[in-house]
Image (cartoon, rainbow, N blue to C red; front, side, top):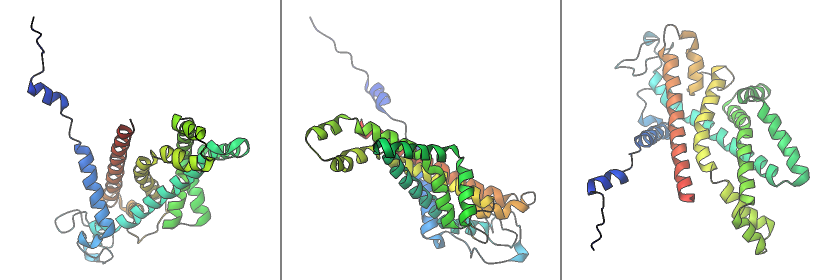
Length: 286
């Protein structure tokens, strides 16, 4: 008796194994690359001096001569947006570093601090978490004064409590894992277990969270500048551009729409890349 093995046709196998192309990730990567070039070498992209005044060209709509239009002083908005990438990204990256550094310290202490330290840190995180992030950032800016460094610190402190809770959960999960129990059984010291096993595995998700938090931090920093508590004009920082264009929103829409769209595009790009990186790390860990 002959046994027939029915195999799918080659076309069916190709369709079944073909994965959708991550066009969104590629577009996000190209956008992030463009913003990186603008921040590192704005002279490669700008069309004119971003601070050059041309009063005869004030409030010109976007067109061939000025792609993003001009502001109330005749300055080219495209060049100002390009030169604003560096301070905006610096604030976003700085705020993310502050936020995640605080989250690692607070989350680790809350998970491994023992009966005395852990409850105190938990209460501190809960108190900080009860404040809205923007309200806490506004409080810090009011105390320290508006500047780029203050905006980065304020946004970082305001967003740290949420990440601290995530770090605490990851550390607790890693502490109860089988590889930590094996390290304890082998007689490894607590410090070595923390450095070699707990922290590396607990903090791996923060690699993706870092990318996600950059876009979020830039949005918060732009909100502070829009409220007049961030980087002050004539800086080209995107939030400062939004605040400077607010009085002309009825007559020159591009002064607020263009910087706002730039912030949205960067936030979407970093969020897409962060989620993709998180998915890759999860597949590699499984």
